[in-house]
Image (cartoon, rainbow, N blue to C red; front, side):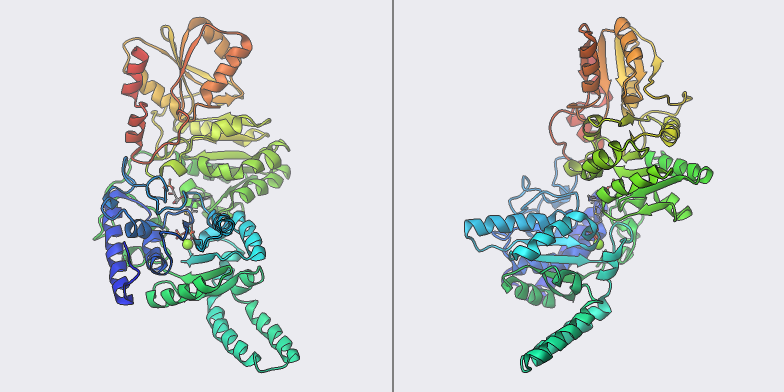
Length: 600
Ligand SMILES: Cc1ncc(C[n+]2csc(CCOP(=O)(O)OP(=O)(O)O)c2C)c(N)n1
Ligand SMILES: CC(=O)[C@@H](O)[C@H](O)COP(=O)(O)O
Ligand SMILES: [Mg+2]
């Protein structure tokens, strides 16, 4: 949509139209409502001032970029948002050439903008990278790695800081507090302008004095942080006043050096029910826009809920239990323990690397840390798991939520790689529960285990029913049923899938709850290899380096060559977004499809 000639009034009308469309669509499909509503005016102004046909528009996380989608080539298809086969909830160059980069994990935008600026400089072109980042995403280390270089090399990059004083939950930390020092900030802006005019008429000595005076004011504004790093700071500005946003961005565009525009916005702006600091509205399922009431409430207990309740009762009994989340207190369920024991459970903001490393000394000092991180986000803390936890052989337990296909978030968020990336690490133990009881038992094992371990569980509820089960013992599996010829090996939620598939077969198959993919139950596997020759592996994980790989490595190592092993894990491709069942169907992983494959 070309809005270059729009007047401010026309832009305001357009912003309202965009918000209406977002509300209508998200209330049907679910999605990131309050982030997108709050960012709309900024994105409209960005499209008016910069040129999306040539300037790289780089959205951090990109969950807030619905207005950008609507302003480019997705007005017609917006109804399909986050649906299987429809448009993604995030920016995605494969979906549209107007999306410069893919995102979903936070705090990459400034590094990308610096990279784009380098390429533009090398090509001798005149294009300006514009990074759009939220206040919550300013906590991660990558942001400061990028600013460190940007402030030194001075590439002409414009950073739009969308400050709604919210991450998903309340933002944590000193940076967030600094960004909130805005009363002093607006005063400082006016003061600075006046001082600079006056200084032009004074001799050197007076300039020096005034400069010191000015700096003492800057100490209490967000500007100090950026200006001392060599990045110009403009702000705070009203992130809903399109007229002044356009003016400010025009100024920033002409700077020819790095500049940050600090805009204050209201999360949820335009939908009163969601406005302000209401965490629930960050990401929602379908709801009635009149009342804000959710249409569908899941009745089954989620794996997260079981983790959350079990952790609290473990913390009740043992004061050595501690825990951490990186900006996902409600998502991981750590919030319950944080509320009850705020001195032992911490949200450290979006900072997975720090979350992991900081738990090491706690384990060393005799505490039992539970590091509750989504499978996909632990990718950020990989070196920290190796270098700061496993190398020290410390008893940190990683609770990996959202393992497997996560549904509508799609490619960027699928929790499919954790087994492959953790299995290679010495000292690491990997286990998985498959229902409520085994979750409690896996956590009881993790609590007592004095080495690094990780247990994974799915988004939503487990596939399997609850049952009576024996306690977890290191490297021990449980044979759930004997059968004829065929052995189903399930890991975590894969046990439920194996059971559902087995129920569709005429022949009775054996089912093994593997429990540990590292170390494997070699004794059991060797014994089963004598009785069963067709093995099928069920696990919600990547095939490469996954559960099937681990078992094949074992069989090969033992020289057992008469087993035919088929893995029903994920093939070597990124998995798209959409309703989980539809996505699984597209991969041929529904029990009915798996049963057919076994029969054939
Ligand atoms: C590395 C990483 N950790 C955690 C998340 C989960 N996450 C997505 S958005 C978000 C909050 C971001 O806050 P902010 O940037 O201020 O955006 P807002 O929604 O407030 O506009 C979090 C924690 C993520 N996407 N990436
Ligand atoms: C944008 C982002 O990364 C989160 O908001 C994510 O969508 C949360 O996912 P869950 O809904 O699984 O907690
Ligand atoms: Mg925010």
